[in-house]
Length: 122
Image (cartoon, rainbow, N blue to C red; front, side):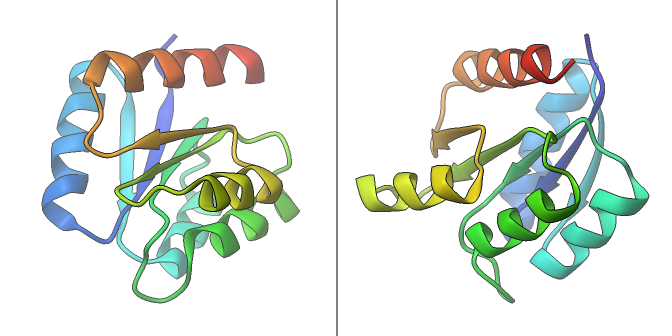
């Protein structure tokens, strides 16, 4: 079932670890470190799923998510964040998040959520 995953995360080291893991699982990846670059890659890379951090240097992740939803209402987007509050999760879900994963996460949990999201979208 592997496909294309876009990682939008401003922390380069964390993004690279995630990309390495995704590629080991057979996914093709692209990385953006800002919301602006992520939105461009949504259009040019054509991901099957987006892993989106909430805290980005140029805009909040939920705003990026709203913009993704505007042009790609069915694209699965999983929020991956080190910050958690029920209000943040609710905001992410209202913006259209498919799921929410708290950093640090168990790789098996992330893989299961990715597979579930891809299964629903296909």
